[in-house]
Length: 159
Image 1 (cartoon, helix red, strand yellow):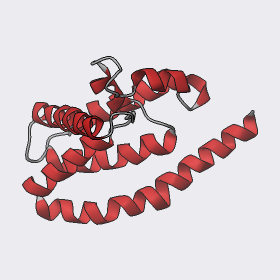
Image 2: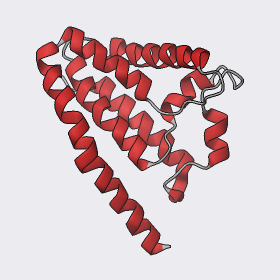
Image 3: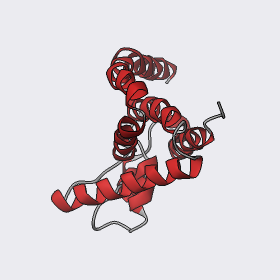
Image 4: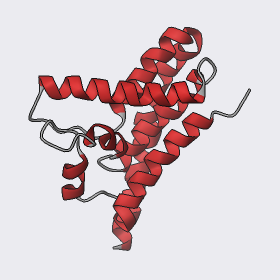
């Protein structure tokens, strides 16, 4: 099995963007988030930038888990370039549709793109995907959320 390079690249991009913008604060400042969120009145570039901006560690790692799990499954059926294209296409298209339905809302995060990946994985690799669809939410709720809450509490004790 070849390494899942596209999944690694997308995961690294999400992590890099978050920690570059957050710095040592562990959160991205509100004005920065607002300027990079996808809204109809924001820059057209925000259709892409919002995919890499998350509202805290729980949001970031809650997206990274499914991205990695479903990305690995998809790279068994797709090339790396096809996976990255799917990520951007699903993220931008679903966000644009959401913005048309709810014009005042701003969007942040890769959830829409990852949902597209989940749908594609279900179509291309249903046997491998069905277990992930059951296990991933449990891991996020029982592992990711408590772990990120612990990081925030340790950080607060240091301040």
